[in-house]
Length: 430
Ligand SMILES: C[S@@+](CC[C@H](N)C(=O)[O-])C[C@H]1O[C@@H](n2cnc3c(N)ncnc32)[C@H](O)[C@@H]1O
Figure 1 (tube, helix red, strand yellow):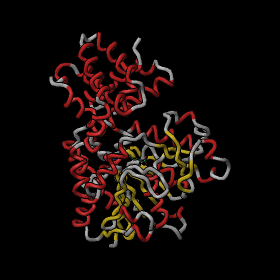
Figure 2: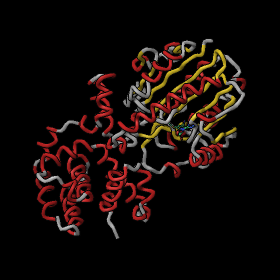
Figure 3: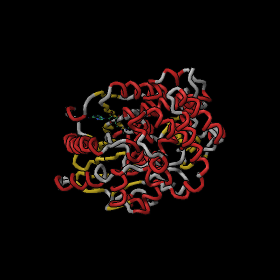
Figure 4: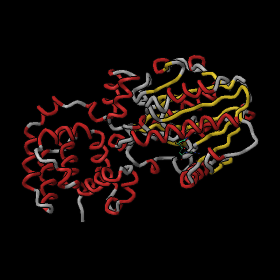
C-alpha cells in the first residue's frame, strides 16, 4: 500500500520522464485510482503545485545539493522536489513533510541524505524565500518571447499568476440562466451575465445540474471568439449565417454558436475527442452535424460566412491550468504547430464567402502562434484585412496590438482570471 506522497512522487516522475500531461499520468496510475476522493485531491495539489514552482524548486536544489541527483535517481529527485515545494510554498507542517520523505527514501538507502537536506532547507526557509525569483518557473522559450513582445513587466505579472491555483469558469446555458440561483448552487460569482467563477475542486461532474446539461466549463478568454462573432452578425438572422467550427472538441465554442442560433458545422480531427464532443452535445441536449476529419484534407462545395479556427498550439496561455507545459521543451515541437496553424489558415480560404470572416484563435501567448502568424498570412493574402476589435468590444483595449488581441493570464476588470489567449478576426474583402 503506497501513501499519498509516494503516489505523488510516482506521478511527478512519470510527467518528468515522459512529458506526460498530468491528467494522462493520473489516468495511467493504478495506485492513484485506488485513493479516496480526499487523497486524490491532496496528490493533485502536491503535484500541480510542484510543477508550478518547478524553476524555484530546482534553484533551491542547485544551491543546496552538491552532487547532481538527476543521474543518481529520478524518483528521489522528484521526492525532493515535492518536499521542497511543500516546505516553502504549501501550508503543511515541516515535520510531517520531512518524516514522510525520510520514510520513503529508506527503501532507496538515501534517508540520511534526504533528512539532512530537508532539515537544512527548513532551517533556512525564510532566507531562501527572499532570494527566489518566480520568473524562473517560466521556461526560457516562453520567457524570451514574452520579454521581447509583451515586456518584462508582463512577464512579472504572468509569473505571479502562474503559481496560483486556477479558478473554474462555468458558462450557464442561456435558457437556464433565469431559472435558478446559480451563484448559490455552484458556490460562485457571476463575472459576466452568463459566466460564473467558482473554485476548482476537481469534482466538476458532481456539481449540481451538470448531468442535466444546464452548463459547461469554459474560461472567459475562450468564450470571447464567439462573443465577437455574435457582435459581427448582430443585426442579422443568425440562423442564416453559416459557421464552420474547425478543431471543435471538446466543444465550448460549438455550444456557444448553437446557443446563439448560428447555422453551425463542427469539424474535429481526433476520433477520441469527437466522441467526447458528441457526449457533451448529448448531455447539453444540442444536436448538430459533426465531421470527424482532418481539416487539411477536408473537401466540400459549401462556402461559409465565418470560419472559426481554434488551432492546435503550444498551450502557453494555459501554464497555470496545465503546469506540465512549464517543464516541456516545446522549442522543437512548436515549429510543427506553427506550420499546421499556417496551413489551416490557408486552407480556410477555400471555404470562405467574399465578405466572410476568419476568426483565428489559439490558447497561446507566444507571438509565433499569434500575431506573427496573422502578419505573415496578411502579407500573402492581400484580399484580407484585420477587423478591429474596438468596433466590437471596447473594454479589452489594453490587450490589443495592431488590431489583434493577446490576453495575458491575469484578472480582467471583472476579476475573472483569464487564461492566456490570442484572437484575430480577418475579413475577406474580395
Ligand atoms: C484548442 S483545441 C479546440 C478547443 C475547442 N474549439 C473548444 O472550444 O472546446 C484544438 C482542436 O483542434 C483539433 N485539430 C488539430 N488538428 C486538426 C486538423 N487538422 N483538423 C481538424 N481538427 C484539428 C485538435 O484535435 C483539438 O481538438
